[in-house]
Amino acid sequence: MKTYRKYPNTRLRRLRQSDAIISLLQESRLSKHDLIQPLFIAEQKEKATAIDSLPSVYRFNESGLIREIEELMKLGIYTVALFPSVDSSLKDPLGSFALKEENFLYKALNKISKEFPELITIADVALDPYTDHGHDGLFEDGKVLNDETVEILSSQSLMLADAGATILAPSDMMDGRVGVIRNALESNNFKDTLILSYAAKFCSQFYGPFRDAVGSKANLGNQGKTSYQINPSNIEEALQEVALDINEGADIVMVKPGMPYLDVLSKVKDTFNLPTFAYQVSGEYAMLHAAIQKGWLTQGVMIESLLCFKRAGADAILSYASKFIAEEYLDG
Ligand code: PBG
Image 1 (tube, rainbow, N blue to C red):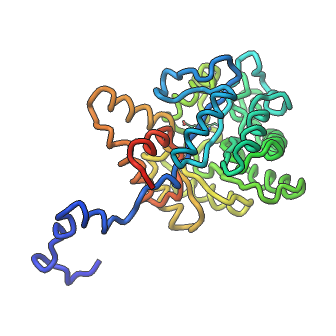
Image 2: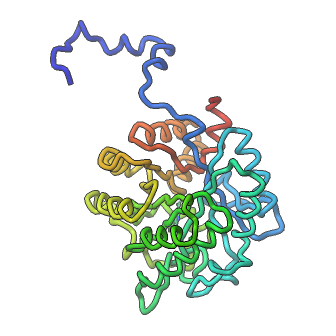
Image 3: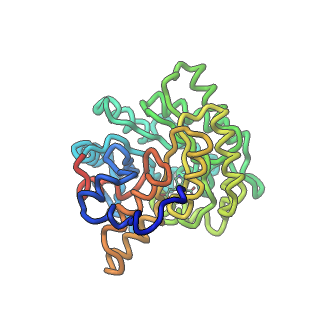
């Protein structure tokens, strides 16, 4: 800050006198290249089914998914994050369906990676869509097992890479999983598969609608994920998580949730200077959407919230509003 700048030599309102000047001097910009659309996929007859707590977001079957991806690509969104919504009859304590070849997610990934070679697919690595207790890993005697879970995540990662996932995104928060996954990829000739680590993932109440979407909420009950996700108050610990994941071989790191954690995002970007993503999670989207529906807030809050992620240092953003923002606001 230069101290010689004083009124009236300096009038900052000169910078805001017209839309053209405001735009010329804009520091951060949001473009379609920054947007990632999370998509839910289910084995179902209907092309698309609604999710109550995530309005305007759908679970797609394979053909619905393909149609949705075509629409996204026409709008200029080339990156999607895929999450399976698994029928409860296929869930068990070990999350076995995660490692079954007949899992519809692998078939869909295979198909879309062949059909859309320029599409970037991000595949989540975790067991919560598959376990009947809703935890991201194996759960025994009231505890989520770390090393045993990591072994399964490593197999899951190889299957996802083999099915054509461009980027693997471990969202489970087990210790050491990025290193184990990276080694498995290297020794199985998946040298180009990227790892986007959910490195600073906090134990947040903002994940509620997502848990509805994948059907893990009722299963999880009152059990929180406090033994593996970070305490929302802890930034030092979040930075340690990021440092570990980078050392273990993450190409990109993520901060999640987004809006209440912009200080963490900014610090992670400044500290490590690596590709850093932010996730505007389901609860953030749902609350903005609900307030817009009620007429309490205007639509512009959605793009404002994403622009603020860019200002804080995000290189790209996962948001359920990505498609809507690209349709309504962005032409380049
Ligand atoms: C779980 C996972 C979660 C999200 C992405 N992967 C939820 C959780 O940790 O319970 C949340 C995404 C969102 O809320 O939009 N592996």
